[in-house]
Length: 392
Image (cartoon, rainbow, N blue to C red):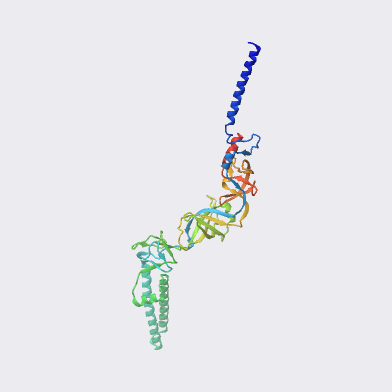
């Protein structure tokens, strides 16, 4: 082959190769750019995103927020134990009549139930007999005095009659005092003495106004003082307790008398106000938590014992600090907390931050971020994952 032919063949091969290279470049130029393009020269804590990705990331501004100095605890509603009474009969007996039902409101002094009490019958019988002996001793003493004045009896007879009268008077007063314990008035005791009739019916009355929350007796039931369960339970529901156990680390900040806000799960959107009226003196050794309770007024009786409640105790003045939404903070694998700050919404820089309180969906930033800086909110987790892939 001549040199001219070889030259023409080489030129043709070069033209074909050049055409193929240009076609490959043109083909690649029609492909979209990578979804997550990161500059190889960017620092290891910096990630760049495309315009499409930037649209999926919500930017939020770090603002100053007033964080309440408070202690939060989950608890429940309970009866106010200072206004709860288990009503027993002070004497044994058989129930004759129950005059109230469970769930019924009662007034102070209202009859609750009646029993046939052998002790009451014995006390009334003693009153009748001592009243008779007192009357007899008084007549004997008067007659002895008359006889002594007429010199028809000796001085020792008068002395004996006087002693008998004093003994009878003492026994009578003791019998009256025994009936006062049963709640009998002077008029009722005079009526018992005058009629000479024993009535063993003893009526148990309510110690205060409230509601019958439990009833365990019926006519015919034998009752004994102090035997559980109590025949009736009375509770004043106009004031209840919100009970909780707080972490022992919060104990030094709690003081009785501090204001308390209570949120009830069964009453969404409602916040009730109360006062912390008890802070436990000892920490539970098993849970390392401290018992507290707050008194809450409930005149409409909306609250029920064992309802779930969240207690918030105000322990000081609010603190203003830099805050970001909780979804802007990422917990890294090593346990550190980070946010992704940006100036233009395309390049994000990971910042390690130190957090404080968490309230109202916001995290308090103690260190690592200044007010008015922009950070990624929704999408912060994506940036953390993209940065992890980039570092591999």
